[in-house]
Length: 397
Image (cartoon, rainbow, N blue to C red; front, side, top):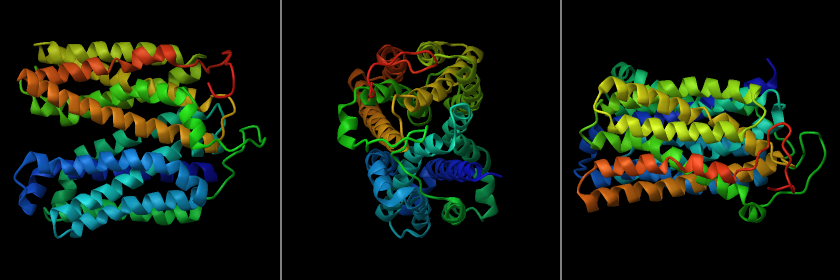
């Protein structure tokens, strides 16, 4: 097996295990609250808030850390931070437990940024659709593992959530050890063709319009994805059980990821797949929350999840195909992409809560989340086309 494939396996599993730890911990929220004597949901939300905040800040720092440590040490630090979630298994107080999740979130924020430069360096244009699609499914894979096996793992370790988190964190530690053998450094400012390029700084990234359009497009998708797990269960009145909707969404996302890989390999242009998937996703999400028929709701949830993940591979490929792309530049692009996306999503989620409080009905928050998901369709009109045969003006548009 080639080194690049070993590297890909390690980075994929590292992020999947991170996701499993995040979701498994979220599933145990009520038990954790009881153990620490936490009585209000506001205090309980600090766990997820800590991870979200750490991802916003960590995403921005990821490219800086990469430039100074090199890939091998930077990714090792990421895996070490994720493994740091093991502290939560021994936390004597709720603040220490929250801090452990914050540290873990920092590691996850670094990893998701490092996906892109690793793909740009190790894999050629023909290979990237498949690898990008696989990486896009990493979080869903960990989410699915948590939903399927967290209960069994909890029973296996004697019913203690601390022991369950310890085992998952230990798996991250094992991947860190493997990385120490397969990881390596490489030149960040080298074109895929081998030519040298100037260092793409964060200041340049801030001036590059595409770095604002990309997260603007994705932020609404992120909101509706998180809302299905965090917001919809608080809203009675759906035709279908929100827990079932989330499971269907995950399964559909895996299918949509495969479809996205196929579309990216067979269709020359990127923007049409992004634009019309975004339109379909919003339409089916709207049907999912408005229909009174459970079967229609489940079908709409599947189709919404399918079109939610189908455009991810074209979107990532679009960024990687920008003129003059290097591993160093793509790290900055995705550092901004994830940080800005999560910042906008957090603001929109807060807005959904405020809207629900003002109107006195939680359903308005669901409608707000669905309307916000149209960002992918709307912002697609500002995205540059980078597919085969496209003509791009300049080197940073």
